[in-house]
Image (cartoon, rainbow, N blue to C red; front, side):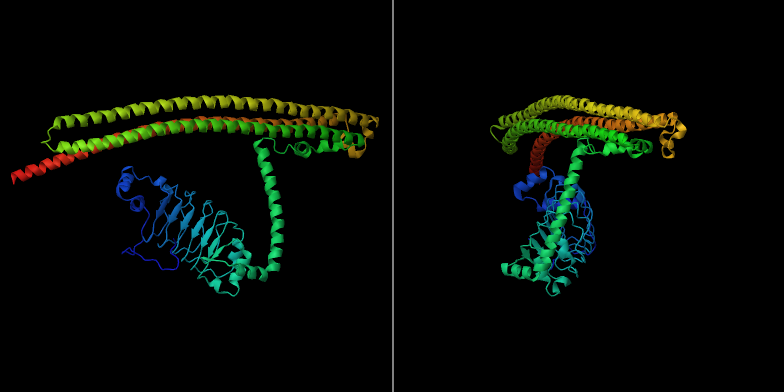
Length: 555
């Protein structure tokens, strides 16, 4: 339910600005939580703000949005009817689906783009002048901006891209008073079903579409072309991303080959010496590029194998965790069931023990003591069973991690061996080309008889045997450095990835194990403390009753 259509009622007497604090949040959660016995149990379990899904912070003169980062699992947040001036500090609320900031003093739509799961955004009754700052909220279904100060119709084209938008309210803004506004909006945002909280009729939709038919047709044609370009761009980016994680980026074309000649001025000049050298160059390029392409295809296949290995690993690990969790939950349920029975029996016995004239007083005291011992024994045995299960699971997961590491290392090593074969073939092709080109250029030089007879245009690259030897040596070394560098980068990156992956898996299991051990200990310790508090309360009640009886006798 929204607040739209009526002015807010402020229940706070003071007009002083208020702040969101931990205590305020806890009090609101308690106030908005379950009532009666359920509410009592809710509070006794301890208020965990990080687990709260919904909260209303209304009519409290809140000036700044603050301290909400502790409520990371919030799905629904109502901050309406306050004096908030700026949208801020919501970065941690990534699970938020509904945000109500109606009836505040907000002038700018900002700091909202990270709320990717937001479906409902209510900003009714603020001071907003422009619809902006929500470009990434693709899941948005309901948007209310009524009673703001939006003057232009620019927001219509802005909101056209929100394909999931179904309900939109702009009532009370200056822009709605312009002639033809509603037809313009209905025509250009056809996905909207409800406008100002009234369903758009088929007649309205038809009339609006007819009025803007030509303009809409031109726009749709333009959008189709833009979409085609964007789809192609995304496909290319996806392709680059895929080959990047396969470690064979830029090997599906002539990039590596061209890179060898990029800074090799002499090499380019030598290969274009005559038709024979040019033909040798083209043959070298074909041979080299074939090796690159084969390596590229191999990289993609090997990435698929690694991805499948990771999938099987995660499936095995998750199943192990889920099975262990189910077993632990069944054990916990039995403990909680027996705990409820023991608490009930102990409470009844302690009430009976208060009556000092009870005929079987000693027997009841003994029964209460036995129940207390039984509960302590239950907690101890449960702790032992749960710890045994956790130790077993931890050892199993460590073994799985080790097997995964071995399997993945084997896959990576196999890829390295095959890749090194391709790089070796590239180096061989380069050496063969260099040798062939040396022979061709030498024969070319011999045609002139004397070095002085070499044409001026060839003097710089092959004017003498020393120049020729130096140029071929430099070109050969430069090409090998490019090939070796690409090989080293591939192997280095893949090794680093594998090392980081396996280390993270080991550390993740260590964290999970530590947290689980602490959780088991804390849970059972809490049960023990709860039982002790029950006994202490009853004992305190007995002592109080005894004191009251004694005081009455003295009077």
